Length: 399
Ligand SMILES: Cc1cc2nc3c(=O)[nH]c(=O)nc-3n(C[C@H](O)[C@H](O)[C@H](O)COP(=O)(O)OP(=O)(O)OC[C@H]3O[C@@H](n4cnc5c(N)ncnc54)[C@H](O)[C@@H]3O)c2cc1C
Image (tube, rainbow, N blue to C red; front, side, top):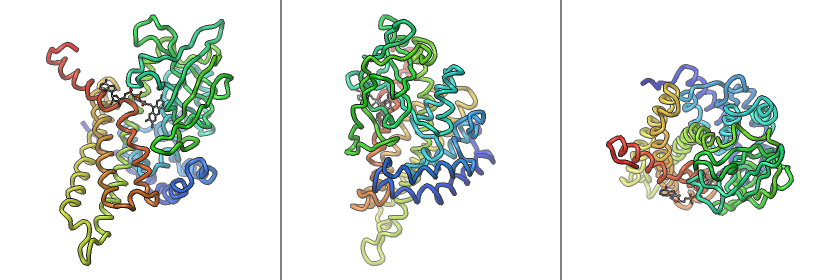
């Protein structure tokens, strides 16, 4: 097992670091103060600069204009980008577009790739992914209410979706809908490419997540699909393959999130240590002289190091043996890194007192936006159950 960074990964991580320090982080305060959509016109030049510096789309293959990195190499870059809420967006590596690009790359026809993938890879448009529904458990995506009924050469889609990240302003959605209710649970649903301006796509609202409805890419919408008619050529992959495709999308998606969360951990940890050194509690006595704060620092350092090594090992396993071989590794890091993120952020915020709660620092933003890490792409409990079941079934206990 070798997940030492290649020379290319180190060089790219260093250039990404410079891009983050010089270009991205100085724009953060505007987003914190006015919100992403208001700040957007001033943020677009970040994307031009990322292209100019050769940092565009590190997750994509070179044929699509990306950097063609291995997952291990990507881990080093993804962590640096994760330090700012804007890092991934600035280089077109943001969810849900990165996952959608992956899906279209895997399953799109030539015509679908030309219309939906290429402009997304260039950053000319955005997309969203509409699977979760208010009235069915998102943790069990084999059981959904949204239907797509064949009608001549079209499909007619009806349903109710929510938590559709970035739907506000997206050019199209990839929608999961049941095409055959009588099929086996994993073969009921299919995926459809649905332009957002199709008649019957109703944008209900951006959900007020932790008190913030946000806008544009930084938002999560509720949508209704009312007799939405799309041609059969908008079916993505084969009919009945929706669940399998969702799993293929979620595999790399989860590890991408983990890389990003490590970046947030690193940022929060850096702020924690800085605060411990710089905040006096009384003359000649800093916060960092308190043993409890020293322990927060040490605990955080240990957790981040362990989480990073686990992410690298999962990335190496996927690079070397494929996604299936890394099933447990990915489930483990999804739980481990999301928990580490929560712990480190909480300590950093606590160490800043009231200052930690206001948006002069990115901690409160991360706190609001990243509590969700333990819920999306599979809640902790679902991953824990699947890890335990595989362990127990290997010892002969039937599921
Ligand atoms: C910020 C954010 C962004 C999101 N973006 C998208 C998106 O772009 N597209 C999209 O389709 N969805 C998106 N989601 C939805 C997300 O995938 C779901 O919230 C997630 O799958 C959980 O589904 P649910 O909310 O319906 O919770 P439920 O399925 O109702 O689960 C609720 C809770 O029950 C517990 N639970 C569930 N299953 C089990 C189990 N088997 N064993 C033990 N306990 C269990 C867990 O604690 C879980 O948190 C997003 C969610 C958030 C918060």
